[in-house]
Image (cartoon, rainbow, N blue to C red; front, side, top):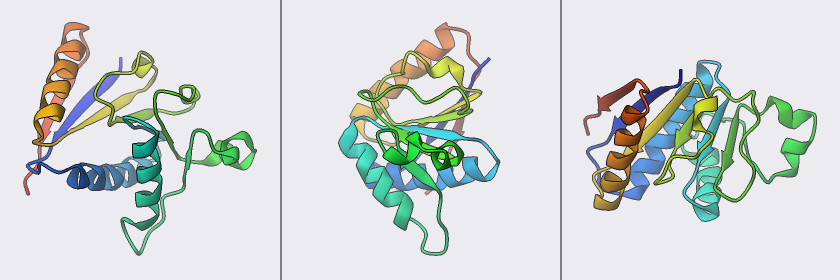
Length: 150
């Protein structure tokens, strides 16, 4: 059964939420998981793509947008992190974890071993992610909160 982790940030900004998403993606990929970052929309996906190039000057996290020609190649099968949104197809079955930055829950979330949700102290995010928490719990998924300090 999919394990759900909520990471609760003390910050209110989208900047802090996306910055933490990059660091968490690096941690998850570093543990050997193939990861899918599920963005709210294409603009957020492209922003995450840019941020993954620059969030740490001393590291690189191989990644590709789901609409990238790289994913269609043999080389693309080895990309540990994909970034997508509602429009493109869901990630392939070999991806083990999802970091969900979308306000809702994609219908295919249960194909992953792990799902991470990031909450910041912005009212729209809080409201949307409370609903996600309740949905996961109602469906019987194990949910755990991680309260992060500033």
